[in-house]
Image 1 (cartoon, rainbow, N blue to C red):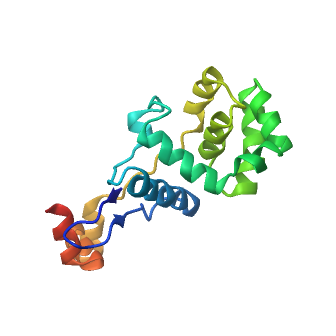
Image 2 (image 1 turned 135 degrees about the horizontal axis):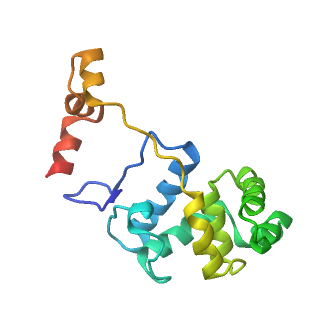
Length: 173
């Protein structure tokens, strides 16, 4: 999520420390897009809100900004694996080609698939058909009771200590 500058302070971007490092980089660029393109913050969850946001929406524009920085259009179009992935009708073969691109650019399969769609190499129907198969596995949160059992300190108090009471108070305010 991102928050615009308030009360003379700087804008703030939060990323999930539990996410894969490359996902955090994409998120950081996407949220920076909210602050630069929209001049406001945002809370994004593409799995909850779906992929149906309009091409000109702020979400789409922020995705395009982050995607273009990480996977430049001109370079992507020059990759043989991009052409093969875009033209492949067998999902498992398409995903094999996506893995080649994912490793080259150090981004997720989802970012590569978005970029292939954004560049016009993959049509809307094919994009939507493969998208659900690219969802990352869900990670289960450890129960809050484990935090307290290990340290004796409630999770909310640990977060306040780690991130600072002033920041937490400002967010909640």
